[in-house]
Length: 275
Image 1: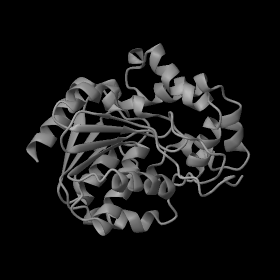
Image 2: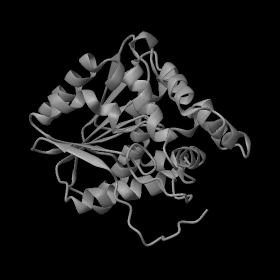
Image 3: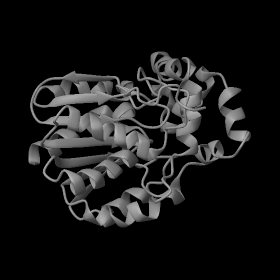
């Protein structure tokens, strides 16, 4: 389907807290800014914390078009950064949000050098070889659409969270609802399917070759028991990005900011204070 009115600009839903150097958090595939709830109090004390819903996620618009590629998502966030004139910016991305943070870092360092101060990658998508199987499934014609449209949003949310957590006992009913609601809302499943189908950029090899040009201080955090993106990716990113530090969180899965905020938040705060 094409966009009924392609000239309509998309306003990404976002929340801002506190004041200081901006810290922009980008959530993963199938998630929303709810994913960063544990960052609000500790990070907004000394920074301007900005939480954003990607196009088609959370409370952002979910147009019935096909503009959900990684590049489409990155372009919208890039525009958001310029529109809000964000400087001394730290990007924090988890999972697909980490992939977008890498892409945005490459874009910013090329076109707007000086805006980006630092980067935090949390269990980030970074190499097409390590894309999880259930995301690859979405790219298979008919099968991908059937998987999305025939699965109730609540079941989808529950199974994704179970995969994402090392200790599923920590998953709350409130969390399942928060993940399920945007998927169940009008356009939610369409957006999820389109994003999944286009999650690997066509020029991904070219982008991977540019990781070595990301010269800002970079913190890489990885849950040791991540079942969604192999922890080997943490090592690969640490080797590729020159000014990076890799920190492991034990007994933790794919979303450390949700599963183990008590370990994740201090790592982020220490890193920001060290800049």
